[in-house]
Amino acid sequence: ASGETISTSTWTVPSGITQVSETETTTTTTIKLSGGTAGNEYEIENVIVTNASRTYEETIIVPVIDN
Image (tube, rainbow, N blue to C red):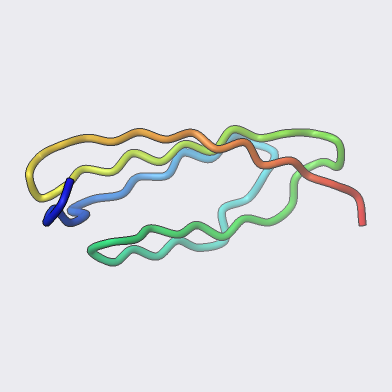
């Protein structure tokens, strides 16, 4: 919501893919991943809690392709 900022951000990464790093500001959260098996898709979850104690959860699907 307008005026709210990120207090915490928690990423959940399944086995088979590696979390390299994560960064967080008051308005964004970013994760860097590596590895994985070509042809697989991985569900990466992020839970954000704002300074107003609201919780937002988002799951993204990361496909791994063979270069």
